[in-house]
Amino acid sequence: MKLGETTATVILHRILYIVGFLVSMAIAFIALVVEGRVNSNVVYEISALPIIAIVGLIILLSISLFPRIFHPLLDRLLRLGQPILKLVQKNVSMDGKADQFLLDYKSSFRRMISTPGHMLASFAASMCDWGCSVVFLWIVLAALGTTVSIWIVVITMAIGKMIQMTPIAVPGMIGIFEAAVTTTLALFGVPVAIGASAAILTRIVTSWLDVPITGVAAYHYGFKFVGQKMH
Image 1: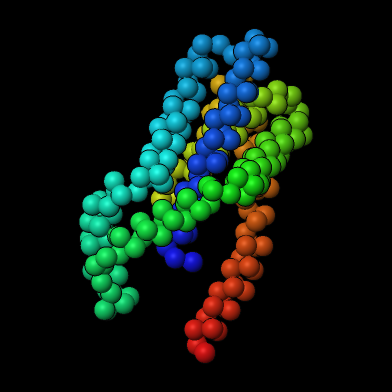
Image 2: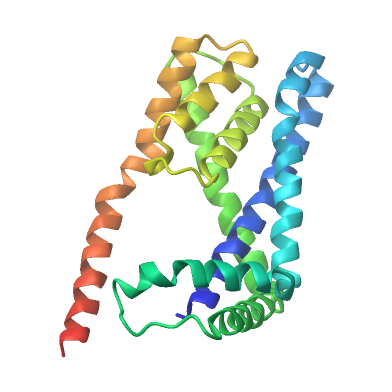
């Protein structure tokens, strides 16, 4: 796949995930307010993240629908990175690369959103992944002897997942996701020791069990790719 195409798929995935995050949080907040489990302090502590998510969604949609706006910035970034790329490929040139990238990105993004069935299936898949994460955390908390409203778990996992998607140079967001989940659960009265244990155990199920499977897949396709290059 071309770089513009792959970038478009990643950005669209992020957009769908943020929409799911906002919808889930809104439903969970309404349910907790109706149940009388949310006070003003909790709302104040958590309200920043949905606002950040909305701002991020607007930025991603702007990039996707009007990519030409970012042409000067992209062209400059590519030219700044040219000396680094020349260490790998001596004759590399960034002339026209920004135009080609934006053309590939725009055409790919518009092609994807023009198929409602695929969009709906992708959103459903994202929500299923999201729902499984919520159920995992809820079951782990129950196994630790703590009964928590499913709506609290929805909000907690939403915050954890959104922070996990933040582009910070920490491999696997180790420690950051766990801290976010523990802190959010603590806001709703869950003891820190229980919250931290639940976050770590959930992380093992939702992330680290995937590593062997994805490692085998990466090795298989990487080996195949190298073999094709050699021939």
